[in-house]
Image (cartoon, rainbow, N blue to C red; front, side, top):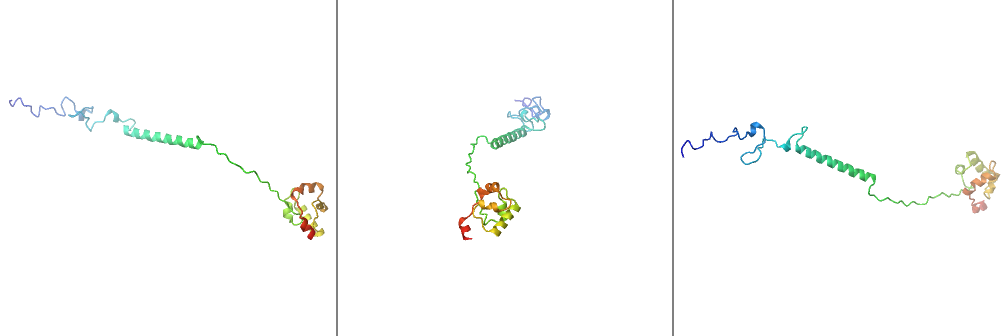
Amino acid sequence: MSLEETPSPVDAPTAESPEGDSESSGTASADDHGEPSPVEESAEDAEVLGTTTRDRVVLGTLVTVALLLAAWQWARLSGWGNEPVEIERQTPLFFEFKLDPNEATWVELMQLEGIGEVLARRIVEDREANGPFASVDDMQRVSGIGAKTVEKMRPWLAIDPVQTESE
């Protein structure tokens, strides 16, 4: 082999050779090993609206997670999948109190239906002046109390017979 036949370093393919200049042309080409050079951007990493593929994947994942969480919260708040709860209610209690007109104050008597402040004070004054009432019907001796008023008050009045006899 002569000196003329040996390839010179000048004749060897360079980065500026017609085979392709990856740094200057900006086209996707392979180096000696068939891999894209690190300076090049692949078609997958092309920017769309200023975002890379990695940015779009992260954004898509976050949006998907947010939508799944919103759907889960909506389902939870709507009661979907829950069994109805049966509430056992107690029977309402009605107050069945009995008031003894021989011991009641005018304030307590005033709470009865059809009895105002003036009539309650008259009952107390009559009781103090004429003694205790022997029966509920005996309350008719108070001025302003008739048979109808006694009938309205009867369910809430009870006279203690022991106390009436002792006085």
